[in-house]
Amino acid sequence: MDALLSLRNVWLSFPRGRRHVVRVLADVSLDLRMGEVVAVLAQRAQGKTSLLRVAAGMERPDKGSVLFAGEDLWRPTGTRGRSLGRRPSRPVGARIAFVRRGEPDLDVSMLESVALPLTGAHGWREAHERAERALGDVGARGCAERRWSELTDPERARVALAQALAREPRLLLVDDLTATLELVETEYLAKLLHKLAMERDLGVLMSVSDAGATAWSGRVATLAGGELLAPALPVRPTEDHSNVISFPGG
Amino acid sequence: MASTVQQSEMSAGEIVLGLLVEQPDTCYQLDKRIAERLGSAQFSRGAAAGAVKRLLERDLIRPAEGEGRPDLQVVGGRKKTIYEATPAGVEHFRCWLRASTQTPPVREELHAKMALWGSEDLSRLIEIVREAEVSSTLQLRELNRQTRVERQMIDASSWELTKQLIVTAGEVMWWDARIKWLQDVRLELEKERRCQQAMSGSGRAQAFAR
Image (cartoon, rainbow over all chains, first blue to last red; front, top):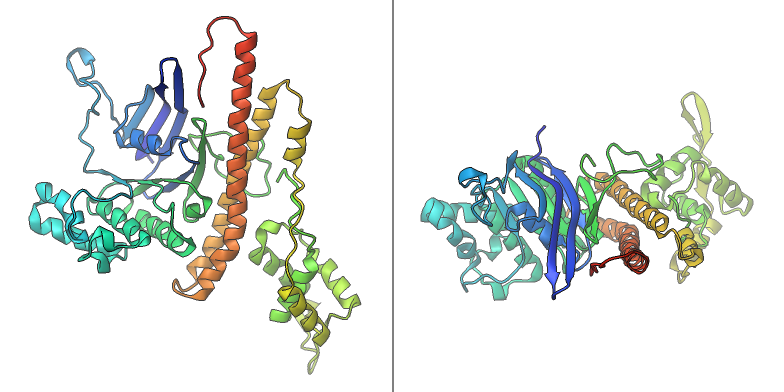
């Protein structure tokens, strides 16, 4: 089965000052299939968000390739094969959704907050129908008429997820959604993502800062110092794993 | 698992006693229940039999009695004894359950290696640490797999789920802390190795901040 998302030997660095370079991703490879949830466990400032931004086509890697549904996101499209710039070659916005907790720009009801970004592409009525459905899917129907400032942290996390789901993506990138949440709510969201992935053949790549959020992930990898590490498949607890290899395939 | 963390001075005895207080059972079933409830403590198969023997000696448990020897359960054609807690056993378990818990020492093989490692061949130490990180991730995934089966069957809004999450969280957080420590160790070792290479190598050293 072809991978929905494929990162191949991705390198990404940022300059710091005049002579230093921060290596954020070092030779990172990763395959994500439809219906699969992969969790990447990493501490603060270890590249969680950068990894997801690269996967989303929002950040171009220095080296390596990013393929979404088999298509290279940064394939040159200009004449004579030159890339036209720093934008990905395919308009992937509709099929990839990024979930991030943060205050919305407008002080409107949560229903509006979820619906408004969709009205351009889908019209007012469908946008609102999708918004209602999405809020229902995440168990946040009660938040529809309320504003951001009135919501609790768990409710905000659910609405953030609804915003992404309303776009009916094929790939969901979730950036540390459960960071400040407690056990029961973290479990709820992790299980929900798993259920949605299975029911809708959705691919989910989630970054997490605590292992509790990996409960319902099919695969778990760790990210530190730019290196992505993961056990190879298949595995049984009694086997010797001292010679495991990292992604892909694991 | 490469490390040997001593989780506590607790042996299988208290667990077996508690399980029998919950429900009388055979040694075979006790092994299964221990693995289900406290899988990551990694008691060996047959740990229950040893615990049962010691508990019998202390009169904390006894073979269950009843009419027509229902204490003998037939499993695969062979008769297995069902054990139950005595009143003394029930009392002992209750006291243990409610007593303040001990904080165990951490005896971790990797800590010892790090303390004793010289400054040479850091690459090998980094490799060991990297393997430990991957291995821990694997254990975490296995733990998740085991606990998911139970969670499927529990009603989402109940105290049962919260309790299961709390118990599992204790084990999950242990792996979380270990993975993060291993990551920090790896980064520090890599930094040190780069310093060593920069000092011994010729030419410009481009310092990597991470």
